Structure formats: C-alpha cells, structure tokens
Image (cartoon, protein in one colour):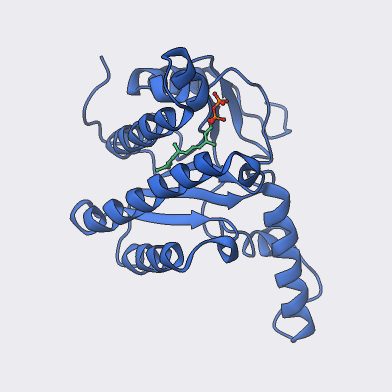
Length: 243
Ligand code: FPP
C-alpha cells in the first residue's frame, strides 16, 4: 500500500519533476458502455489524486498533458466537456491553492482560450507567485513544436528590440519556453498503452526517462506511480557520459 505522506530525503531519488500524458480516458469509458466524456470526468479526478500523492511524496513538479493543439479536431461535444472540466478544475484549484499552498501554471497558447479561462489562468498565476513548493503544470492548447516556434518568435522580437543578445545559448532559449525556470522532467509517464511522445515537452524531455504502461489513465493510482518511480530508480542516467 502506498504511504500517505513521505518527506523527501536527500538521496531517496524521488524524481523532482514528473510529466504525464493523460491517455486512455475514452477507452476506459467505452469498455464500460459509457460515453467518452465520462472517462474524462474520472480522468480529471485521477489527476487530482495523483497530484496530491506527488506533493506528499516530495515530487516538486507535476506536468500533465490535458489538451493538445490537435485535440480541437475531436467532436465538438467532447471538446466542450473537456473544457468544462478544465474550467471547473481551475476554479476549484483557485479555491484550494491558498489553503494547500500549491502553485499551478498553465502551459500552452492561451490566445485560443475563452476570456473566462484566461481570467482563471491569471488568478492561478497571481496566487502561485506567493508560494514556494509543489507546482502542478497543466498543458492546455499545448504542442511541443508550437512552444518552440513561439519561443523562437519571442526571442527574435527581443533581439530586434535590442533586449536580447545575439549569441543564444540553450539556457537562454529555455527562458522563452512555457517551462522557464522549471527543471526538466526526470520521468515521463504514458499510460494507455501507446509508446510515443505525441508532441509533448519535446525540448524539455531531452534526458527524461520514459515509462509506458497499459493501465488506462482513469485507473492510474498511487500504486502505479510507485511502480513507475521504482523503475525510474533502477535506471542508469548517464546524460551521454560514460560512468
Ligand atoms: C486522452 O484520452 C485524454 C484527453 C485528450 C483529455 C484529458 C483531459 C482531462 C482528464 C480533463 C481535465 C484535466 C485536468 C488536468 C483537470 P483519450 O480521449 O485520447 O483516450 P483514448 O485514447 O482511450 O481515446
């Protein structure tokens, strides 16, 4: 049974940053004869459970892929349900962020969101600035290539305005990404049985350890997370070097 509350200890090798592709909601629902949207509702609850568990075991950052730049092509009713769940979640998070001292950030192109959503995002940003500690990042209208292109455009604009230097380093470029100031993911988890990255955190996952499982996201539990972390702890991370 997974422990309720563990303090992060030096040398315990808990990943600082875990990234998760939320996959399998639709199939989970279909197997139960339910509409796909029912799977998203349970998936949103699973996210809440896993975020709390991450916070309790000493993970510092959890980044989830909730809606990609390509997901707009899904049936209108499904897109609406996902957006409604995200709005509800953001609203509830705002109500509890102060109490639980958690930080939350949205990664993605916010231009396509509604004014209501942008206002919720502004509120989460403003509350987050007051705290240090666990941070959840929700990728919304997010695409890895889109993020890199946006960053390149912003850098070019700064360069033209004399606000950036011509000699661009990887570190400087990273400051133009949505993840500015956040360490790269150590562990990328994809439930749902597929083994691909699907345009998620392309820059940031350069040295992430990948963990794939057939468990569908709504069934993902703290015990499943423990299994992924145990596998991560067995990996030998060399970053291109020889030991
Ligand atoms: C992938 O499963 C899931 C999504 C595209 C949506 C994820 C969104 C939520 C869980 C809603 C709210 C999120 C948060 C973070 C509060 P799929 O539909 O591709 O599943 P399938 O592969 O089985 O069809």
